[in-house]
Length: 190
Image 1: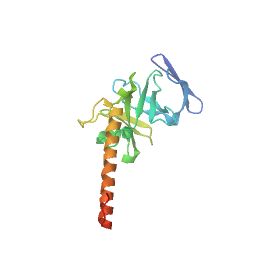
Image 2: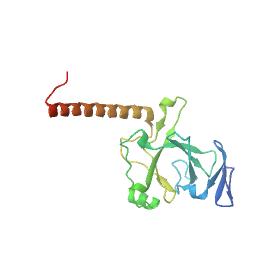
Image 3: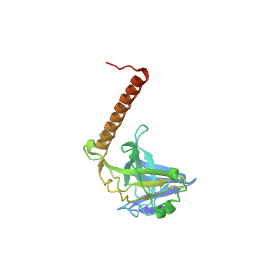
Image 4: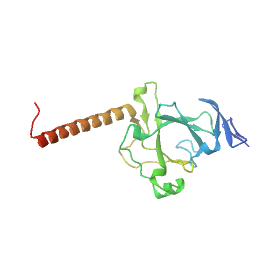
């Protein structure tokens, strides 16, 4: 079977492998079991419905969402919990039905990252996350209604903000522990 889209060639090989010529990774072979289908595509790319997630490198939190319909299209994605631990996504019953999610644990959330020439200004789109059901290899880009989430969240700023909150929480916990120890022993330090 041959699929041609945007003059890019995709070939099915024997054994359920898909061979795709990409602009970023060269020619890749993808097992049919690793193909993720986004039936509605992505915002702005509704015709691109087949993807594969590729590691950026072994130690990186980033992955590539490589289109199998157009080898020139690949998006950097990351789990938003990496830099925004309080991030939540509410999905509608319709979205749950489309993804055939049986449990919240079946859902994996990723967000698309934009990396400009100055990596300190790297941003993530928290307004339109990708929700994947990796059990059945389907996904959907959803639009979050929560006003606190925008299309451009600066990742480094978010990391600093949450690191500062974590440090403040650690200091508060240490002070509370020290106060509890003093109360228990009846002594004061200093």
